[in-house]
Length: 223
Image 1 (cartoon, rainbow, N blue to C red):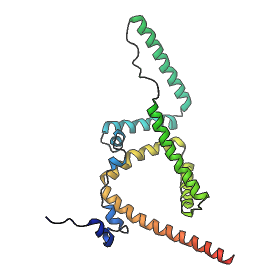
Image 2: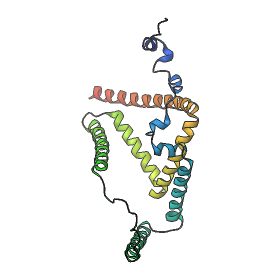
Image 3: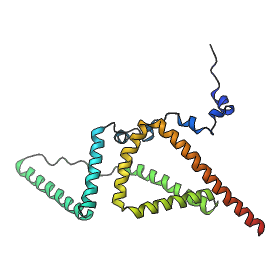
């Protein structure tokens, strides 16, 4: 029986399998459905449930047009809709008692402890990440993290100045419904292009970072 080749040993000596070869890493297939959670939401985002995806897209478009183009106010529509639902349920229940009909089929309107614990756990993870970033910037003086935060906040501020919140949320829904499906279909080609773009951006970032370190060392020497 032939012995299997040592993949780990080969990857340590073969430059084609090293980390410096993003083109080869881009050819490794990854499951987009698993990366999105592998549940019904992933099925909708990848258009495996076409009816639900179309319904989500149509609903988002309707809400955006209703509030952004038609000029309706969100809080007034929400209040009027709530009043309408409450009135319908009230008269339904009254007529059901008078006519010996079943009551409205309402679900159990309460939040379980399991849901609260899951939300609190996820919120704790995100809060700890933000605090860790702040610790790296303030205490450890990590210039790389500092530049990443500044650049991210500048991009968010620039995009926010172009669109209002509702339009930005609508664009986010459109991107969430279209980009995962396109990437799942053309994953190999997209990974190759992203690998090349990542190398270019990384080289530019390293050159800027090295210049900043050189200036700081020169200032320390002059002092």
